Length: 507
Image 1 (spheres, one colour):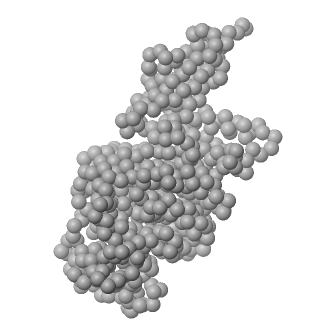
Image 2 (spheres, rainbow, N blue to C red; image 1 turned 45 degrees about the horizontal axis):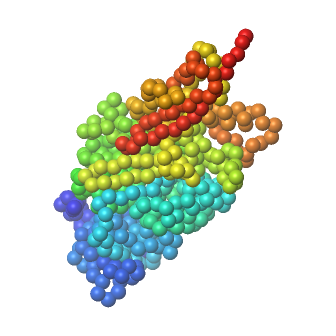
Image 3 (cartoon, rainbow, N blue to C red; image 1 turned 120 degrees about the vertical axis):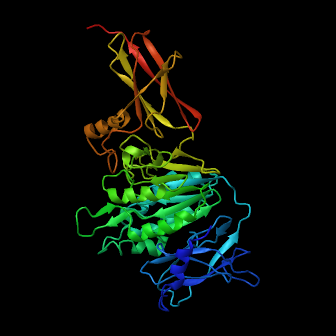
């Protein structure tokens, strides 16, 4: 991989920063992984360092120089075949503040050889931990993180924005939680990661930049490139206070970087506001599509909605790639903002408004751009992929106007979902765009309760993009009947069961 000749010449001819700017430094082969350049540890040529707009390449002495810039951070594009050392807080040591180190020479970037880096990997994908207090952090830690310790096969982790809920003082606690999983952890900023006192978009992420690093970066693995992008345009003092989109410097970075990515790699863009959100600028989405249409294997990961959606962009929506562009809008780790009735462990139910329980995603990457995505419900078995609702009792012989509902958390338009009763023939269910009755039950319970059932009540149910329905037969024998629902996700079958009872009655 290499930059174009034109880009290299532009960087070579650009003016360099004053001595107080950290825009030059080196990259070395940290053979013992201690983060220091010891005797015999050699410089690394051909490594790329960026400020999120420009890209510099190290020479034979391992040194790079970037042009003068207003970007807040300088970062190393971690190459495949190497791993990074960790900072004191456990995050990967891939960035430096552009100013503040007191010299023109940045602290060197250390890369540890990883010749056995696997071609296939799994990444943990979390959206919207969105903690407002230390208590919320404890929910996140106990509900999501603790059950994963020592139990996952992931080699990488990422949080897709709204890491906290307008309180950057909680970043250290959240960083401690995610880095305890023992894998490099990457972040993308969200609208609730902006500093409340910011006066412009340029200074809206000062706390994020200081504690979590760059808001534009790239991270390379043998079969994948992950590109983190801040897609929040802050508008302090205006309504709305933010919109979705990308800055000119981000487009410049993508224009320079994407052509260098081998076509057989999966290119994953991690953002916070989904491309389908009404606040995302239409013209920015069109520009991004034009860039990604040159990529053989693109994938979008987003958060923000506190719902779960799988969107496949096509020509009708302005995407003209060879195949539909998949955007996986990941369900929130905090669910519905840590709301709802607490369970026996003192953790809120926090089911999202579309009926999806809170949890996290898995990205499985394989060679040649192949991948799959999965969802895991917090503290639940891996095969818990749907939730069913049916009436407890129906009148025998009544008109079949009442149904069984299946909320398939990773469902999407056109997914076949089937049901059968008492082991009979399988029949198709119909996808419906309506609220999940399971959550409507909670809404009614909240409405009719004489006192609060939890600190915050469950969210008002909204139409789900992954709900299926089928009418239940009533001309069967009196008594209990078994309903089985099945579907396939990523080639694996999943089933779930529920019962209802038929009762005879007279007018």
